[in-house]
Length: 254
Figure 1 (cartoon, rainbow, N blue to C red):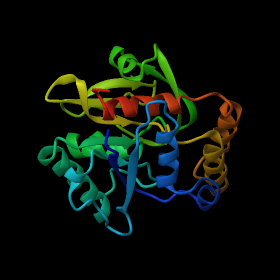
Figure 2 (figure 1 turned 45 degrees about the vertical axis):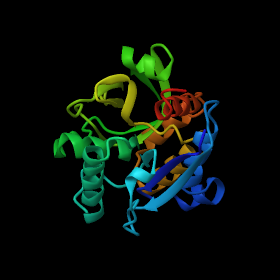
Figure 3 (figure 1 turned 30 degrees about the vertical axis):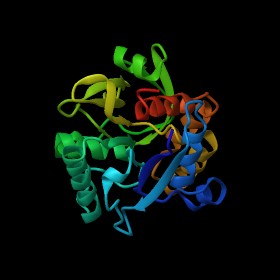
Figure 4 (figure 1 turned 90 degrees about the vertical axis):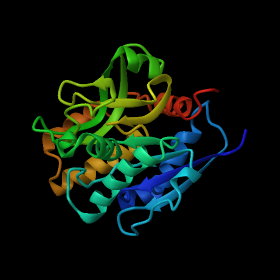
């Protein structure tokens, strides 16, 4: 089997303390994808869409394109965000053979690109942070290969309130109804075209602890949120299981 070519659209740079120990998002996602028992030979080519305005010259040269998380708001109107939304929309319509994987901010960008500007908004119910149970739909159970629920690291205040047209729900929580979604290729339920998830399968507990400590110190996260996450921080999460699911989506015939 030939090596799978993946592009990663870098929508942010992790905090310096995270980069110093765990690397940038390219390294973090490479580690996640390599952790799966389904892993095949793959390359992961980075494109900085924020400061370098860098995109794949030919999206069809890739099997899939992954959009990372970000501290920015997916409903913002900065030039780079609008360009990213347009890139997703164009890639989906013009190059349907290229699969898309969206993580947190990437999930929200996909929703905005294909569901309109109201498909990503600030969640009036507040933040979701740290290990969080997400309740699976029957399709979610099938995609993830696990019954009832998953636990995934969260770090978001924006969310997707409604499914974009043509998408199917994978999971939800009480305050964020669209925790995961898929769109099938030509209606074939054995071939996922787009996979997007609100949480962060790539985040480990030490990474989340650094982010929570930093955002707590700056006042972005309240003292109550910081304390609550501290109580839950050692709950095991299903990041590797989600990586398994991503690989099954990338290689449906395997």
